[in-house]
Image 1 (cartoon, one colour):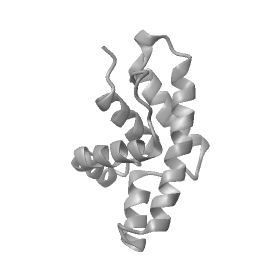
Image 2: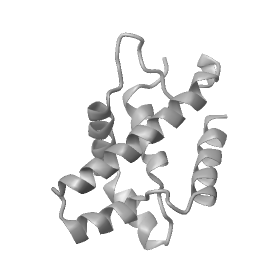
Image 3: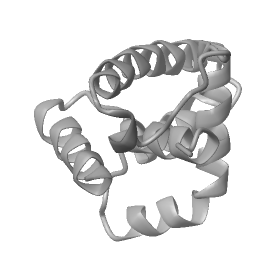
Length: 124
């Protein structure tokens, strides 16, 4: 069920929105504007903030045993934390995402964020 959810999320984000940010797009923007570009980081932050809203809205209605991640009630996912998790996931899976890129596969930010949430907040 979880794999179906992730596949559906990936298909929907890649087919319905031409403006979806991808790992390749992010890397290209960093090359063009610099890795420490403040404006780029603000734009990425706004995108991730909206992405989180959507991901948590979708997952909220799922039964607990069907959720892909389980954030404890005592912990709040702030934008700063989400960006940290996101960037950490990019580093952890850098080789895999590079291989996808070489095969012409665009990895959407949404998939990276789902992977980060699943890695850091697995359901027991």
